[in-house]
Image 1 (cartoon, rainbow, N blue to C red):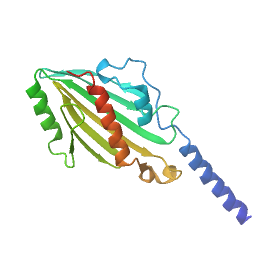
Image 2: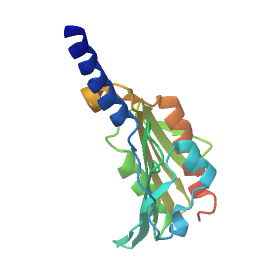
Image 3: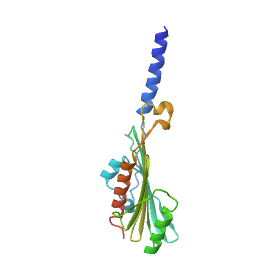
Length: 186
């Protein structure tokens, strides 16, 4: 009798964990078109684990024309939790864009300069999160990719049991996204 109760409890807990583990971590993409400024190749979005387009409000402030875009994991994703956020801003003059890069990177410790992305670029990555700030001409992009993977015990112990995506992988991806966004920038 005791063995039956123990086996039943194990089956219930195991069933619950399996249900949570196999539940989707993503959402369906919006039907709205992706703004041209935020165009990222489908291959790169798939590699980043963020194929599901979510938003792209245009904004205008102090003579700066820009757009903010976001992608997340798709509805068929069960393990890889990912979010890619992009801001693309066009400034009225190159000095204003240069000043914006200084402002965006100020106070963010650990940013390393890159010489092969745009006119100037800075990146930082830690396990679970990477960000890039880059400029080409009057265009400034800010890219952030965050990610973790569920484990079988995530459902039992919460998100603290998720495993962060390694920093180098995220860094490689934000740099690739930044390059694509700046390819046609002026």
